Length: 259
Image (cartoon, rainbow, N blue to C red; front, top):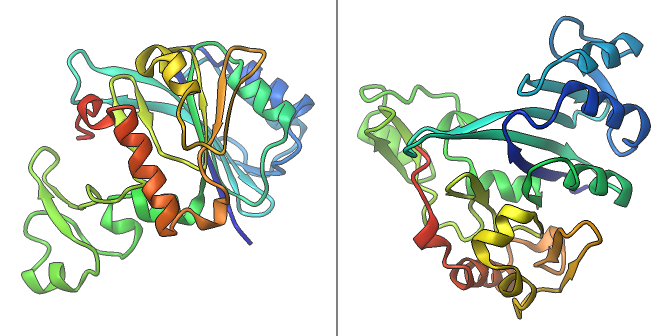
């Protein structure tokens, strides 16, 4: 069974708890809430009221009945001057695709920037750079010996800005890239909102020649399917597509440091 990773980015202060509660009550069907992380745990009718009472930018974290996760929270780019902050709507380990109504709601929320669906496992190994997500080790400057680094199994480097060891993912074709105010992932499917269209060029997105399809939706969002099969993102011909779209949009010139 393939699990899916969804990520949708927005500006700060644009999604209230009331919007999320309305979505979960009336539109959501692909995610079955089981535990609300916070004041209470077992998800019940009170959970909707608790979520609805939250102001914008408050984290919402729900564990699903199938161990999937629904998460809304702030994310930031601390290395930018001025710093940029926003909201991130995510599904993690979701066994099935969101349906059309769910996608339409999510990508028509105010200030939607860009969104992605990925193979969860592929996303982890391409974009996660925290060694502790793969092995239980300490990552401080004096915690690892040369032998530890060599035996880790993935290339490690010491990041001076955060004073921790991180995995070197710079050569991974499918890794996420941090851009001013948003991210870019050469994902199985991509939704481009207004800000992404302004950054890359609307016509340039529509004319990308190697997509399975690209179409403009009624809400002015552009939907693109980049790869033929979400289970085959790791195959050479799809990794070549990932490199190609990064080059096509000149992502490396736009990329900013994560840390």
